Image (cartoon, rainbow, N blue to C red; front, side, top):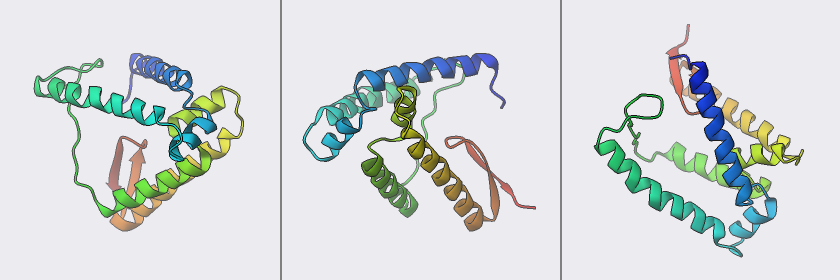
Length: 157
């Protein structure tokens, strides 16, 4: 499915809104993340816990009632068992988060706010995605297409 212009505009607006919230909460500041990971500040934990505590039951209720998405599809949450690769990937993500003081969305907010060193983290994100796709292709004998969230594998020729 190719996204229409309206889909792209809606995505841009939601992304900009999300970026604004991240910036307003100072989640693009290295010190904020460092203090959280050092267990000196618990604000970020409370923010994440609050977001999960509100969204989890709300999304489950919406899914159960067959709610339609903003783009007209039916809300369907994905569920999958935890596998070894999820644990390894989570550990690598955590290490990168601790070293850089940011994760993907705040890295973009950092860059937009003028923190040029965020480009190093963004380049690292793309290298990681490329390595993941290469490993998946090697392991399955298929080529990986799509973005980081909506990936498909196709038989290698």
